[in-house]
Image (tube, rainbow, N blue to C red; front, side, top):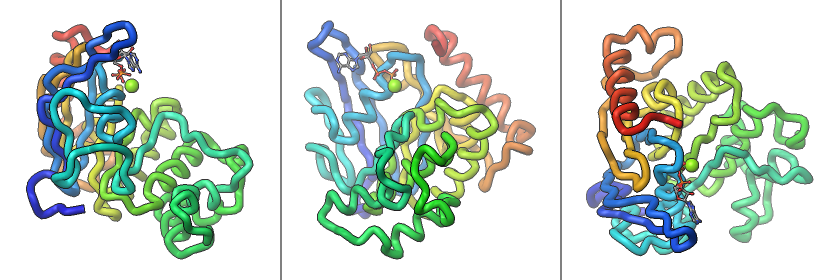
Length: 258
Ligand code: ADP
Ligand code: MG
């Protein structure tokens, strides 16, 4: 993917209306993300966050406005994009290694034991779990397997839709810490949707706040907090409370997080 020319991800005046129910989900969304950035999106339930992510992933057609990755218009799913959803959706009859390597085998490769898979498992702290089956893993570990699978084809971009929403609070903090490290070590560009203001600030270089449906960008706020970040210290960072307050005020003024 050509990263030399302009932003890696461009969303330009994107709108979306679902014919079923005549729902206007998005209206005039503009967003620009540079290579290597970590951008978090927060917004009320039903404001079109998942719709925006599906459009970027090429899983849904864009009929209004323009979406481009690396300067190329999105026309369908791309090997340059890995997607992680709230449920890991692992195949129960495949072990961890087989689940992670699935995108490679779908792409025509048969070797599931290659160095790349080992590196990915190590990156996600799963080095000793390659031969385990999903039912043997905790929810957090399953979600890490899902992240490894999304990274298997070495995509430039990772799109994550509330990936830790189903996890308990402590596991979620650990996953956030792991994800920040994986992002720093892998150099990926990440767009992550979350309901949690704390998660958005912990992970993001920027936090994009969306309005209620039809979703549009209300604010795009930089997070001026040094990395690596830690849950032990982030809330006492002088920038944390004012930023959290600003995001909460924007969401409350527009109807709040549901
Ligand atoms: P969010 O992820 O912010 O909660 P979604 O993007 O899932 O919101 O949905 C935005 C709106 O679009 C909702 O009102 C939802 O019901 C509607 N919607 C989403 N997908 C479809 C679809 N395939 N057909 C019809 N309506 C849809
Ligand atoms: Mg959603």
